[in-house]
Amino acid sequence: MAQTGIAVLDGAAGVTSAWLNELEQLSHLDDRHQAYRLLRATLHALRDWLNADEAADLGAQLPILIRGLYYEGWNPSATPVHPRTKDDFVQAIQSAFAADPMRSPEHGVRAVFSLLNRHISAGQVEQMRNALQKPLRDLWPQPA
Image 1 (cartoon, rainbow, N blue to C red):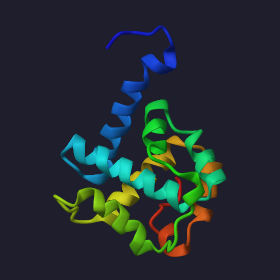
Image 2: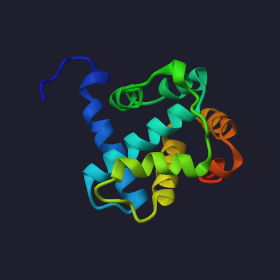
Image 3: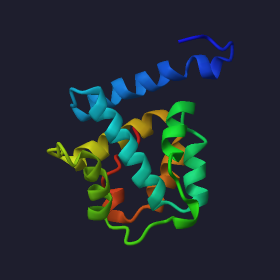
């Protein structure tokens, strides 16, 4: 890839690759494409479960390429979605795996939330967790 001379852009692919590597380990996936789909689907579901201000606050803390993925196709006026149950959230993630369903989509969601715990501020994590209903919040591990 050509270097732009702009550090945030030149390092973006490497940061994204590191996030996907970490997610593969956390989720016990053996496939980079599955890790990408899991990250994308979970970020989209989370974004759609939050109000527009909360979603934007989270987006501001994501690395540039992952931020683009997060905002892809977003309609802020349609958020938060209803109903917003834990089962609806998990089903939103599982729909990204229609051709090859995940054995444990809840484990995958926990892995993405653990990844976010490691890479976004503790205050932002707390804000996101508090914005979710308790059954869904229970999928988000407490930060270490």
